[in-house]
Length: 158
Image (cartoon, rainbow, N blue to C red; front, side):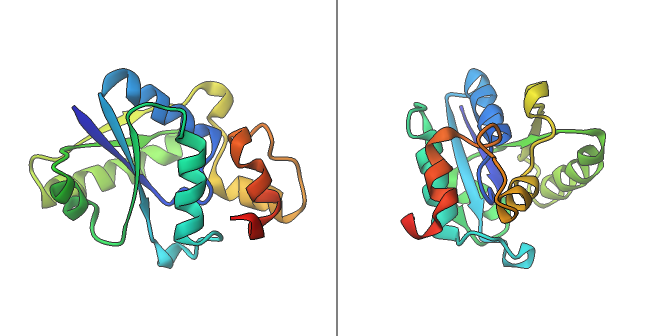
């Protein structure tokens, strides 16, 4: 069985990777779906985010990276996937994620959302925290996969 793990992944973090690894214990394949999400004004381009996600997951079997700029339910139908994975870090995430899960299910009755919590050491990590630390030349080496660190330090490498 395949699941879809959508997000902006701007950039992918150890929290994201933790959720992917947890999902792989439950599902045969995880499709990491990177949303264009121009309304969120991502720091990294869609191509850079795809590249970073690929680099971070290249050693994980049964992980595929795709990008999309449609409704998530349309992507799920296109890929013939009916399970969405979402990570929950804190209670504050729950209300938003629950609403999104209900909205997706109202658009596609066969679409289910499974919520996974990252390991406690990754529970505080978010892409916005990582971007903030990077913008102040801080050390994000414990927050992101080590394979992507060189690319975060020098965006021209991507």
